[in-house]
Amino acid sequence: MKNRKITFVLAAVVALAFIAVNGFCEEPKIVPFTWEIFSNVRNELTKLDFYFSKPFSLRINGQNNSNMDVNGGMLIPGGNNNSSEILRFTVDVTGKLDNISDVPQGREVLEISFPNPNNTKKNIRFKFARNMNKNRFELAFAVIDTVNYNLRFPDEAPYLTIKSTINIPNTEARAVPISDEHNNSPQIRQGNTDSVSISNINQVTDHNRYGAIFIAGQGSLSRSALMRYIRTVNIHVSERTLGDLIDCYLLEAHKEGINSDLAIAQMCRTTSFLRNENIMQTYNYAGFTSTPGWSGRFSSMRQGVIAHIQHLKGYTSDVRSYDLKSPLYDPRWNMLGSFRGTIRTLEALSEKWTPYNARVYENDIRTIINEMRRYGR
Image (cartoon, rainbow, N blue to C red):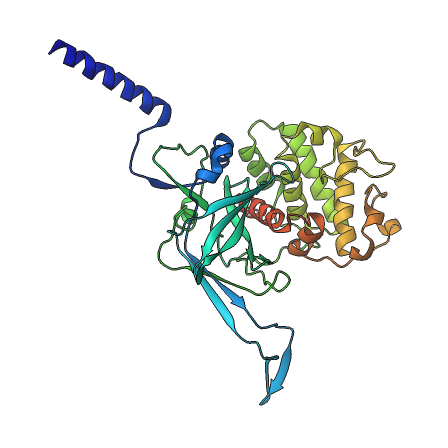
């Protein structure tokens, strides 16, 4: 009897130790695939089963919308190929890792193959881009029959999930006003499905509920709202440095007629909310790469801000450098070429600013702006 008691006590101690390290072992649960999980099991990702966070459908248009005819007084699609295919994906379908794209570092994209629901002998490769603000990997692209598609959802895009029997603590809390709480709870919706219609990468329409974000114009956010937001994200930021930087952006953006909300959101992303010491010390808030004759460093905070605002001005206006409100500090002003004065919105800007990852960049900036707006005007 004594030996049995000793055995029982030892077993209990071992069990408690396991729980302390790994959390309670439970029935498998669906959890978001986060950066922490990615980092810890990166070498074993091919063994994991991946799932969508919510069901959705894709409509692949067979017709070319640029072909048009007139019939019976109406505008109708031209050509003979008017077929379309609908692909419906559920949260139960299992995907496997194909590839990890590490360019640029910190903006990883996971390529996951899921079976084609209309032809299980074929796979569709989906690309999930890392969203640093929400700490997850969101669906952004699809490769279907060797054709690349840029996916835009009318609401929140599906993100990657996995099954786990380990309690994974939530390392990030979001403060949401009570009035907005019912709109922002992180639920996995099992009922209604989101739907996106795709034809090709150049014909996708942005149905983002917040609408277009324009480069030109005046920002909507006050100094105090911007300060509150950024200090919430980075509690260690110097209040004086932040205040001076926000003042510079508001002043210079106003002088050139540039949307300060957009410029400051870009700055926040580039500097990781003023955490990146190298960028803060070089005042290169736009993240410009070095050019012949320029090392990548500005001589002051004000010059770095002016250069950023001037670059945005160059995209959206055909103004000459001598008509700018400040001396020309933008080292890439003369590199805009045919883009000058042709770019009006964040969506179009993203395709030129980060052509290798435009969709992710656009989503990041939108997320920051939308989070800023929660802190008032």
